Length: 118
Image 1 (cartoon, rainbow, N blue to C red):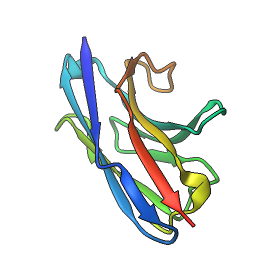
Image 2 (image 1 turned 45 degrees about the vertical axis):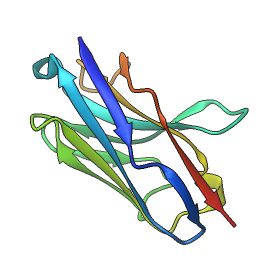
Image 3 (image 1 turned 90 degrees about the vertical axis):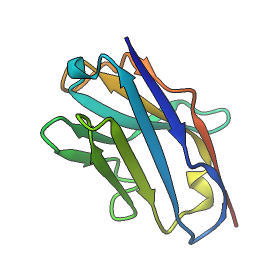
């Protein structure tokens, strides 16, 4: 079993920055990728960025150039640095993990709220 705990959310003005953290515990040796998803009110949950065990990252087009995913799965910490935030980035952000390389993501954190004011 794997447990994921997010932190770092909050309220920020448009143009500002936040850093989200995801702390992993449990059977992390099984995990090959960690991702951040987000879900805005009334919308589906969308993939934001992924990091695999080899250190490769991928980003949704909507966040490319603004968000940076760093960390190390083996060290059990992953970070999402978010810059140039926009009101449309407002959502609950979830950390997730998978034993495969591309999903489906089977382990989820409780989420952390990010609110960007205009």
